[in-house]
Each structure stands twice: as structure tokens, then as C-alpha cells.
Image (tube, rainbow, N blue to C red; front, side):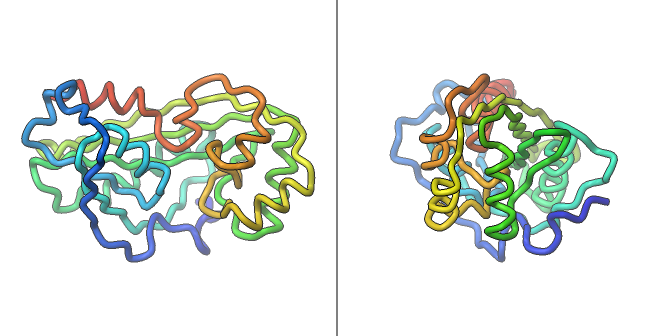
Length: 225
């Protein structure tokens, strides 16, 4: 089993459930299958919270607490898919029939390596140096669990190609010091300073890089009966 996430990386640190009431126009009329249902986001990521909030649908923020470890033989998209399902199985324990739970995981991949969340300033700097001037893949997987059939987990993923320009040591150091790369796969956020100044092209969904493939999540929600 890959233990690279075991020392500090958990989905949450004893986070309590919280009801989120977005102030944006609701997309509920576009998702009739969500009538009388309750959406739950099982993630502590503020980026995923912002993306789900954009739907304008009230949801419960209910992060799960699992150790993110995956088998060594997994590669590519199978890694975030496995971890999303790991979170989904934990989140589905005791869920109510009216609930719909979303879990997710994101990884950055380059040179056959999977870059997860850095555990030190040095590791973050190494990741940014590796990404500098090159193209890498970002894969975000997600699971949707319907409380009416909680033993079934719907899993999907999306991949985007991201090309960085040169990231100077000065920019990397500034970013690491002031922009909290330690909760981000690959040590960067596309919506942060490093993304605005470093990314020169992106093929695929920006929101997949940010943390949720919203086009696929919206489609999955619309498919509810």
C-alpha cells in the first residue's frame, strides 16, 4: 500500500457538519431529481465548497475522516477514483434515504509520478520546480452516493492538461510562504497566484483542476430519478 499520505494527510481534522446556504440563484429547477433530497459534501476543501455553492443549492458540509492510502499498483485516474470511493464508503455509513453525498479526490501527475499534497516547504518547492515550464495532468475523481441505494456508489473522473510557464524560485518561495500550498495536490491552486501567474494554457475543465469536475457532477445530479 502507498503510505505517502499517512503522516499528515487526512480528509478532515474532527470537522463538524455545517449547513451551507448559498446566496446565488438556485439551480434546483434544472435538477428535478433533487426535490425533497438533501445534498451533502463530504469534503473539508474550501475550493470544493465554493464550487458546490455556485449551484445555489443548500447543502450540508460533512467532511469524513479517513486515512488516504492506496495500493501501490494503482496508476493514473485509478488513484483518485480509489480514494474518492474510500471516502464515499465512510461517508455513507448511516446516511438517510433522502441524502445525496458527494466525495472527491484530486491528483497531479507528471513523469509517471503522482504529486499529492506536499508535507513540507521543501517538498512544495520541489513540486513547483518539477512543474515549471512543462505540461502535467490533473485528475479529479468524484463519487455520488444516493441514500436510497447507499450500497451503490457512482464514480467518475475528469482529466485536464495544464501547461506552466517558467516558475521562478522567487515566485515559488512567495507562493509557498503566503498562499498555503499544503492542502493542494501538486502544491498549487489554479485559482491562486501561482495559477494566475504560472499557467499559460489549460486543456480541459478549469474546475476539474480547481477540485471538482462540475460539468460531470451537474450531469450526474440531473440523471437522478
